Length: 195
Image (cartoon, rainbow, N blue to C red; front, side, top):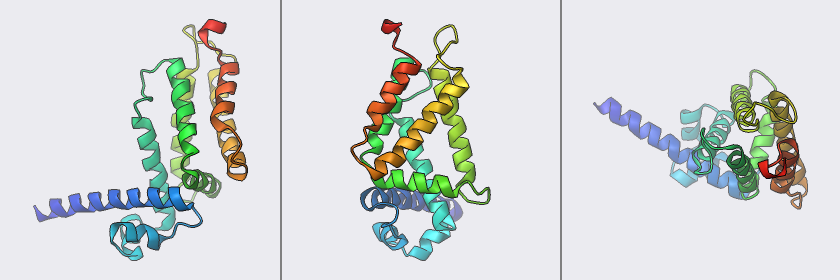
């Protein structure tokens, strides 16, 4: 029984570390977030962080996974939302990203590093892109299964634009990521009343 308690405590500690990391990265940015600052947020040593996550890259990959899980639990998201709701939800996630620039920076940097199949975030990015592609494909076809582009191509275009806009926004915060994505989605899949 002591073992189960230790496991539960370990899971709770991991969650605390992830919360601290999200907070520190969100406030200070990826480059300015140190393991020491994250560890101090939960009262452990940097070495303890590595006990729970193995490496800084694994910790940061789990930070992104936690962020994604939060986005998916958002009341605006879900499997049964209609096209208009799916568009609004996707734009809301992008709008929220403008409030956490450090997490956007982390995502963009890890996306580049994760090109290497040996990188701890490689599988995360493969799975995330597939999940997002599937969600966009499902949401942006009409009742007859039609879209301006074939659904797979459309989902890849939306993902590519969203990822590219994040890079532009990190350089120039005046880039209106949600507005541009919303306009693109309206062109690719116009609202029903304008068809």
